[in-house]
Length: 577
Image 1 (cartoon, helix red, strand yellow):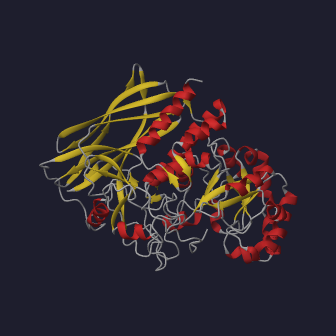
Image 2 (cartoon, one colour):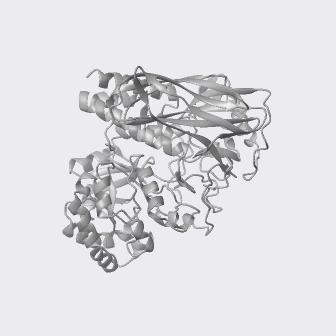
Image 3 (cartoon, helix red, strand yellow):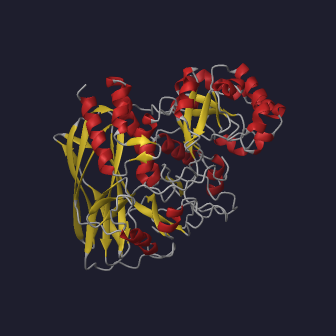
C-alpha cells in the first residue's frame, strides 16, 4: 500500500497514558484529575540529544547504578527512572514466547557489560530456548503536524526505543535507562510447572543477578494462528538494502517472519519484476502451510497504478501466472494455508468496472479461492457480490469498520477483516512509535475477538526509505545502540509519521526485530487463549474475558497488569477443562 492522506483526522482527547515512573506504573487520566506531571516532563526533556554515531567511551567504574525490571508492554524512555527491582514473574503456554526487560541505569558509561542467562529449572526439567537483545534507538525529529494535537504537544524529539539488537555484550550509556530485552520460548509439550532461574549483568567485574520465575501452563498453543492474517514482506526493499539476497539470507528472513505466526509473503510483488525470484516456490508453500494462516496466492494488482490499468492487461498477466498458481494448489497449501487472491488496494468507485471484469475472470478460473480487497466504498453485500469480493478488509477507523455491516456480510457467507495503516489515531490502537506497545498486543487478541475480526491485514513489515532513493545500510552486529536508521516518512506532509510500514530492521546477519513486532506476536499468541476458551466454554465465555480488557476499538485498558490477570484466569479455565 502506498502512502496516503488520512481518511479521518481523529481529534479525540487521549484517554490515558501509561508511564513507568519511580514508584511504579501509573494510569494518568486527565478527566479523572490524576496528576499529569507537566505533560510527563515534556517527554523526558527530549530524551537527551546523543548523536547516532557516537560510541560509548571506555568503561568507567560506575559510582552508582540501579537495576530494574519491566514488562515487555512498556516502552522505557532514556530518562525514565525506575525503582530498584531485581525479580520478575511471567507465564506462558507450551509453544509460546514471552519477554521482559531488565533496565540498567548507571551514572557512567560502560562499554562491555556481560549478559548471561542462567539455567531455568523445574525439578529435572529445563527451559532451553532463551535469548537476549539490547534495546536500540531510532531518532525522531518532530511530531509537528500530528493529526492528534495532544500527541504533538506531549511527544518530543529524541531517541525512541524500538530495534532489538543482537550483541555480544551490552553497552550502557551514562544517566540513561538502558533496557536489556529477554525472550523465553517454552517449546511444545514443555512440562508444566514453575521454572526458576536468573539472568545476570556483569558491570565492571560485579555480577548483578535478577531472579526470574516462569510458570509454564499445561496446554500448548497451536502451531499456526487461528486469526488469519496478511503482513506484507517487501522483497524489493530487501534487495535494495542488501544488494543481493542469497538463499541463506532469504531463508533467515522467511523463517523469522514465520516464527511470528505470519506468512513470509509479499502481497503485491509483480510476477514480471526481478524480485519475483524471491517469492516462495510451490514446494516452499507446502512447507509453510502448517505454520501460517493466510497468504497471497497471486496479487491481482501490484501497485496503486495497476488499479487504473486496462482490465485486459491485468487479465493477461493473470493468465500468464496460472501455471505457478496451479502448482501451489497441487500442494494443498491454498486450502490449508488459507490462500487468497489480493488486489485493487483501497479501491475507489472509479475502479469498480475494471474490478468486475478482472475478478470475474479470476473467479471463473478458481471459484474456490477467495478474492480479497481493501475499500471504504464497498458498502453492501450486493456490491461485494457484484464485484466478486469474498473478503472485504475494512479500516479500523470510527465510521468505517462497522460490526453491524460486517454481520450482514457474514450471514451471506462472506468475511470482513480489519486493517490499520498510518491510521487510526488516539484513542484507537496503532503501533506507530509514539503508541504504547501494549496497543499492538491488545489489538490482535482481546480486541480482535471482541470486535469479531475474521482476519487482520497490515500493509508492510519493511517499507524502507519510502521513496527517498536513500538506501539504508544494514545494521552492523555490535554497532552503536543509537542507530542511524530512520523510520520516519520523509515528506513535509507526513514528517510526524514514524514507524508506519517499518516493523523489522535489516541487520547484516539477517532480520532485526523490534519492541512493536514482539508485541504483535504476543497479541497473536494471546488470541489463542481466547479461542481455546471459546472451544471449551463457548463464544460468550471468550467474549466475556475479552470484554474485561476491551469495550470497543476506542475504549480499552492501558495497564499490563490487567492484561496479565485476565490471561492468568483464562489459562486456569483452559487447564481446568
